[in-house]
Length: 358
Ligand code: ADP
Ligand code: MG
Image (cartoon, rainbow, N blue to C red):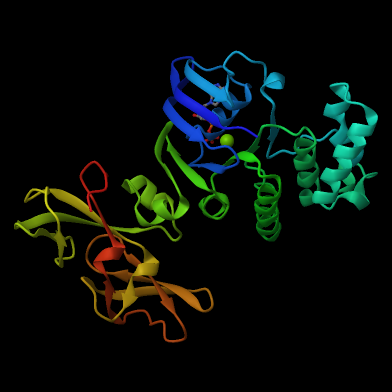
């Protein structure tokens, strides 16, 4: 296994800049997830690591080797795509063995590696089947098996679960997490699904328009998003945002007047009076009733009940309805007046540029 180090990477297609000044270290043996909206450059970044795209500037290292000018086959990586890209006329064994045969690996070694991968992925009973005789989940396991037998330094996954139905996606996600623990492999994994990112990653890299917005441990991104983009992207349902303006500033701190005419006091300094800010609070951190530093008065528009939990949509006069998680049977009714509260520790404050300030 190996570390991957990316320095000041840029990539353009013609005059369109798709990756801008990407700096990223993927530690040896770590599971790094690239996440972001469609079109933000995730696949392109993965493909530059794989050598399927040339770079316009910067450097990519795998282990101690600069690989910019190496052909994909020489980079010792294995890639798994969303479309499984299996050979339809070959059986499971043939699909997994193909790359090794092509590279001239001795038969006994091929059998050993394919047997081992089949055991890990529970494909042993399916070795003689063709892809069309397999379910989507089984096909995806064959595609992963084909990557494992190559014993690559780095695994690259591009949205491998996107073609699976919801239940199978959850199962396969857990299988991939176990696989990572077992192989201690370096994995770079692309998804647009923030739940996949949160559950699989040692490190999440949130991308937006060809740039890295923030990279860090999943819970660090959840509790301390560096900016509004990351705050809104990580977490489901998304963080509520309420516009406001800095009011009184004292030696100890400052108050923020929110759009719904409530006011919250923050400690700290460096924020000038009159400055436009945005306060963020997650639905799961808002309580109905109770006490808290943040208090929002409003009326329930609608409650979405999922079972034990639900989501109350509450109009507070601050613009968009605020979403609050509610639990149990007494989750409130449309029209009901409620007070939503949160502690200061569960609020986030962003400046005009969307950068975190508190
Ligand atoms: P993601 O995987 O995050 O959805 P991509 O990396 O596939 O995004 O694409 C990023 C941007 O680069 C998109 O705007 C896409 O249209 C553009 N792009 C990708 N591949 C090419 C290509 N071969 N030629 C021109 N533009 C491309
Ligand atoms: Mg993509």
